[in-house]
Image 1 (cartoon, rainbow, N blue to C red):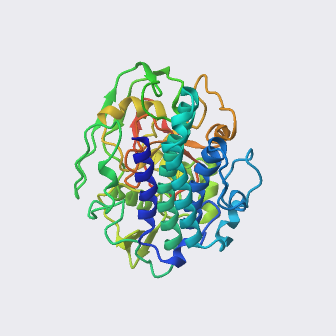
Image 2: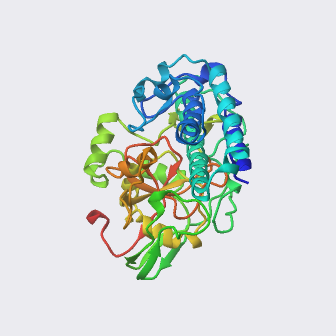
Image 3: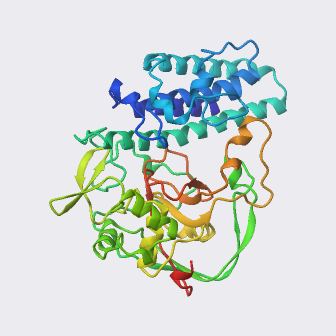
Amino acid sequence: MLLEKFKVVRQYTEQLCQPLHIEDYIPQAAEFTSPPKWHLAHTTWFFEEMILNAYMPDYVVFDDAFSFLFNSYYHGVGARAERKHRGLITRPTVASVYTYREYVDRHIEQLFRVILLGVNAQEETDINELIMLGIQHEQQHQELLLTDIKYTLSHNPTFPIYQKNTCFIDDAFNDAASHYAAKDSMPPQPQHHHNAPQAQWLSIAEGVYTVGYARKNGFCFDNELGQHKVYLHEYAISTRLVTNRDFIAFIEAGGYKNFSYWLDEGWSWVCSHNIQSPLYWHNIKGQWFYYTLAGLQPVNLDASVCHISYYEANALACWKGARLPTEFEWEIASDQLDWGERWEWTCSAYLPYPGFKVREGSVGEYNGKFMVNQMVLRGSSRATSPQHSRKTYRNFFHPYFQWQYTGIRLVKDNMSCKAI
């Protein structure tokens, strides 16, 4: 079963690259993005370094240079190329990277069919857990691959199409990969409409609630563990995400020009980068368009706004006289919400849960060292890979990033927005 999941996920990464031309594999449009070739190699390196080198006797690495070229941030493994220079790695070739993937896949299959038959129960458990972590890691990179491709293609003045039926932000498109229909541990799937339903406010009673992932069969990341109780005041959460129509009203009301809606860091970000709209938006002769993976399209007013920074989400909330939910408010309400359309910003800083411990070895660098200066997002997006979401999932990004499929859900209570 695990081997089959491994194969499916590895094949899906390559499927996402099928619409690309060879020239698309190389560029790196910004330091925070990575080229498709790098994603293909890095996810493969993870299996080679963390599993094959550690557990397969006499394993011969595919290329000694690949650990330097395709290690991301694992200091314990050794030196690595600078992140900002990933787009300069023109060699090895794309063909060599695909050969590398085939080589590592073949050895992982051999590990399943030969090595696992002769190890003790604890070692088998350790190997299986690392393989599952590698699978989940690759699924994270699949969404990053899509967002990085979009960011790179968006800088082409001809607004090239990645794939005609792949958009992820507009109900008018039949997203070719059908990501949205395959979520784990979710309530019944929402029915999307071209005309957005009226937002309702769902009231959640004051009380003590349990949050976090319960230890049971099934995967979660270590940052979800440490199930614990939290006290929540009574609040009301919107059943609908903020739409493009809502956000255009914010723009037209001078939202990007009025400092009173913005956190100080957010206002500095707006001013220093001349931010006037969500990422990928273009005002052409008085009409709003946005760049999508299906090319430049008119903004669908009733679709949920996307590619929003935390700063923008917080400013819109203040303008509306509301606020963003905490990650715990979001989790407690999630069973009664339709979610999975956008990663939803919360006003919670990314911090460890009670009892969190960094694992020994290189895999200990996966989450814990990033628990500073980042905000938590909950849910998932239409670009999230199949079988890669749950209500306890804690995504996290710096508050100024816009290039992920992020959106806004509002909360109201008796607190003043200005006091947040």
